Image (cartoon, rainbow, N blue to C red; front, top):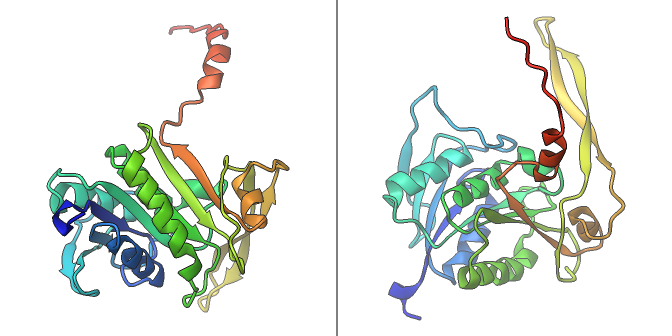
Length: 261
């Protein structure tokens, strides 16, 4: 395959354009195609699928890594994908969108809150085959090297086969001495039991700091949480269609007594 024939790959994240995880992802993708990066200019963790509508967005070309076309965006991870499609690619969409590698897991319910995964979801909404990658290590100096062979293998399969319409992949890596392989999983039934630590600032005003405990309500051995606990890479196909299709027949049996006036 010649350089001209290589696919174009959009790289995004939520930890910011200078995060260590995105450098690893860029380096991994450079072996597979022409890399274009559009990433937030500052950390945007847990922003979910937020978009910017009340202030102007900035998109500036930067030169951080050699031979890589890079832009920093003042908005959210989803803003990055939207601007990439509309202003960088001018609606000539890339072959694939990869997001991450995130510092910290985005398994189970965390996918709802994740900026990393929301960027990938936006890619899928734009009909771009998309993958989000996350690693179980919050350290700035986290060693992502063990993730790289899996990143490349999964991205190659998506480039070769594509993905079903409306589907994207949520990939999480365990912090393990040796990752045992890839498990195709479902999202575990889990949630955060949240608490707000009440504190007082120097002006004697109360403020709150979100804390919580992760609660797993799922003993299945086919979940992302189980796979990661057992040192496997978890791969969960997810979708942005939030319709609860199984509930439609139930609701169709309801009798709505609509009273006017």
